[in-house]
Length: 485
Image 1 (tube, helix red, strand yellow):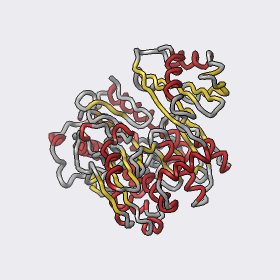
Image 2 (cartoon, rainbow, N blue to C red; image 1 turned 135 degrees about the horizontal axis):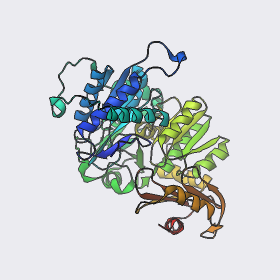
Image 3 (tube, rainbow, N blue to C red; image 1 turned 120 degrees about the vertical axis):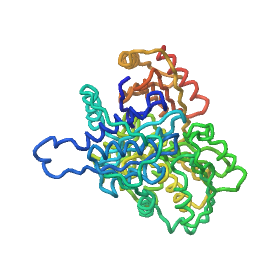
Image 4 (cartoon, helix red, strand yellow; image 1 turned 90 degrees about the vertical axis):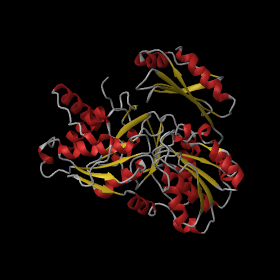
């Protein structure tokens, strides 16, 4: 089966498709991409051929990273290899700090423990753009056709020699935390007396939020911070059903704020003092309002098509341009690249978000710290701040279903759902049909229904947001009925 890059890299099951042999092939193709000749005469001259490499806490991630480093160094790339597991946003910042041509992160992010993957980051610090990953895939295919295979070395399952030509070990944490100190109001945190519970979900974010907040004078308890490649039997995705321990800790410990990051810390989840889960839709909305009201930031807001309509209302109120993208952080990254000063904040319903002046990738660590900063400014319980947001801008409830099906014609389905768009859904008039990614029906009360085929598997993703909790499952059921799959 050919290796394909999705919106955020390549992922597969360990020892099935994700093997040392395939990892070497991908490393070789990325090296070829970094070393490729300039595409036109205007780019003649010395070319940056350095790459930063990081890895998460998954089974064999450190060994895969070593093998990627070895293959790329043998190919002629100068490599900076992280000394230990690190978050994806820290690796992304290392690209900027070390001024490399890009980065490679060994991670399957929020996926189950049996998966691993490779994320490629461009020199812009964001996910590989389609035009970048397409060239990498072309090198993969060309090397396969020409029978070019990297040498298999005996230390794939042991340690690299301490000294290896072209490889320098580095710690991405100090420079990354120094950068975060320029983005977060430390003075506000030092005087607020926050008590915070942090759950890195056994992932690569372990120690980062806790270190930062403790240095800022907050009282911090970290759970699930030890190395556990099986993630304690849960999926390292910071959604409510996976955060039972954090929510219990919040209810029993007298904490003000609970923060959770996924396996590579590019996503955020949160909890209030009552142990109630706070989803990314509300986190995005809270931080956006904080940046506008307290910091007086201005600029456009970029969100994926599956993200809350609450952001539309906030953008309207504050007269901020709103951009809606297909699902995938690479599309949000593209907006920041096209308008690096004009974009204020961008993010997705999955919990990946970033702000102006930071890396062009989701950063659950920074978002958690900004939530803490917001609480320091508000000086009231998080649930009261959320209640105030809802009173001012309206209440929205969100849900999603993944329907596993037999293979189907995605283009035909999208065309049919557009052509046969209903006049109303659940007695709400359909005002507009959006084909940005799948088919999205916008309803007259600002609720919506999105039917979106997965780009990589026979799965139909159905998303809905409604003004009442009772209508969410009804909208999801209506979506399944419209799809007829």
